[in-house]
Image (cartoon, rainbow, N blue to C red; front, top):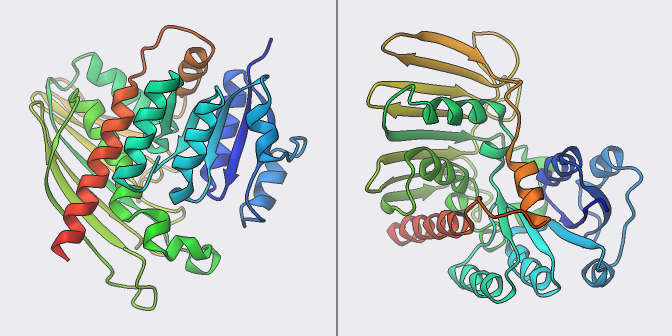
Amino acid sequence: MTFRFAALGLDHRHIYGMSQNMIDAGADFAGWWTEGEPNTLDGFDKRFPGVERMEKDAILSDPSIGAVLIAAVPRDRAALAIAAMEAGKHVMVDKPGCTTPEQLQAIREAQARTGMIWAVNFSERYEVPAVTRASELVAEGMIGRVVQTVGLGPHRLNAPTRPKWFFERDAYGGILTDIASHQIDQFLHFTGSTTAEITMASVGNYANPDDPGLQDFGELALRSDSGHGYIRVDWYTPDALPNWGDGRLTILGTEGYIELRKYVDVGGPEGTDHLILVNGTECRKIQCSDAGLPWFPQLLAEMQGADRTLSQEHDFTVMELALKAQAMAEARG
């Protein structure tokens, strides 16, 4: 029998990729629920025209639905995830998986109590083929031991199209909780770290004074026994850039480095998923669009009962560090 999933909350466009990648991995989209009529709904209907809108309780009580995907307003994601796990369903949640330390603790307890999977879709790793290829090259020892990552996450604001909650600090959780969780995930992954210390964090609103709840700039530094990391995120992508952001990741090793130009390579070849590899014998650019997205089929297999190899603790740790960074930054003022 084909594994079935449903969606709870369509408030962020990440639900498009989450849903399509589960379908591509072999699952069936059983239905969806969302609060009200979010501005993502038209795009969702165009992508998934045959999927039924259902009541939330009907999704949670349907024993044939094995997992739910959650892309609701960030402050609401924890409660939905806990309700789903209590109903015996695995969870894939859009980042951030939660917005407060109290929510994270409640999620930890629910996951331990139910034994269900709580997975955060860090799409800047899981939905980017260039990161798949970089992971393979690092595992092959092509740049030696990784000692630092530098992650840059610029985004285009598109303020007129954003919903009200986007500008409410308590709704989205702060820029480090939200966007920087992507780069924290990549730091832990590439340095092989299971925990880390936040050594510096700051946030600000420099370009949007009429929206005081918005943080349009954030940065943090972190370190572990295995390496160091620096992260910068912002809402400053200029209009001339042909996509939403020039996301980059540099992975520094003891014998070389890898740079990912994930979504655009300004002045270089068109397309996405550009990887630069430099070590003792090679200095070249690699096009990685065909590298695949292995996380989704792996997660689906584990939701169907395969032995767990994806770390549940990793997702908890990423969100814990993001929340600590956010608190540190805001304590500074």
